Image 1 (cartoon, helix red, strand yellow):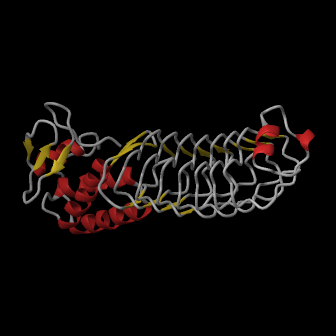
Image 2 (image 1 turned 45 degrees about the horizontal axis):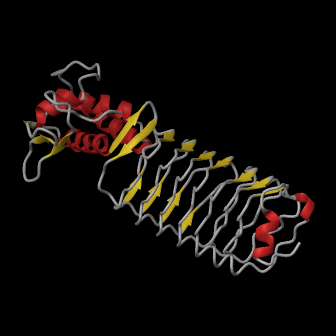
Image 3 (image 1 turned 180 degrees about the vertical axis):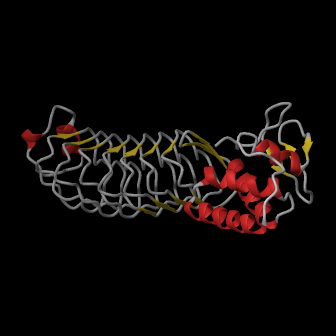
Amino acid sequence: MAGVHCEICGGNLVAASKSTMFVCEHCGIQYPKNKVRRMFFKDAGVDSNAPATKEEMDRFHHMVEKYFKEENFVDAENTTNRILSANPDDKIGNYYFDILCKMKMDFQIERGTLVKYIGKEAIVRIPKIVTAIDNSAFKNNNIIEEIFVPQGVLSLGHDAFNNCPKLKKVELPISTTFIGYRCFFNCTALVDINITDNLKFLGDYAFAQCESLKNIHISKKLTAINRHTFASCSSLENIEIAANITAIGCGAFKDCKKLKSIGSVEKVPFIGENAFKGCDSMEHISVKEHRFMSNGWEKYQEENQMKY
């Protein structure tokens, strides 16, 4: 869903403080609430100023409440428009209008993809109409602390949450199969994230420099841990490598100073250069030399006095 935009310059309209007016962020032009309402619902396809009986209004109130509970915002818009077209001063209609307007201004959603979050909330619940989070959607956001991703979201794009310094908790649905490159890079406060067994791809540097992350689950459907995926996760203590992992990329666990165990890597055919360099607390890794491709393994195995 697109936001409400200025008719002159195309800037976002935001509610003015201490006023019922809306103001363009770009040019400063003010719009009265009734005009913004007409702009907001211009494509709703419902006749304006249509009368309604009390029974009809009660039914519309029940419907809009139901749609909001289900996060069916398309029908919620249409129903809210029907309420306000019958009675512009209806309290319930105006209440839901304000919620819809704020949501449209907080989330830029296009064809199910969350393109950008521009809200100011610390705890963010992504609308259920979203099926994908776009590249850089939350990048460099220094406000968000918790993210709740709804069921149905398939992918988190590259850099989606890159450099969100206050982000502590991320709740992912079982539908998520893709986490892109640098997705949570430098999320230094991240402590809690659930990775389900449906995840099939975890990009390079996905959790690099998440220095507060202590434990993480590796999906059974992952076949590779890519380059620098967990590099500089200085609080990471334990991680269990799934049996079907065929590759551990260069620098995958580099400088994970508290990492003690990753499970068996005996059957992993490829381990990249410096995959475990700087893992000072690593107790023992059991490998067979011939299992490794020519990738500098011998060099850092010797430097770190690792046994096989």
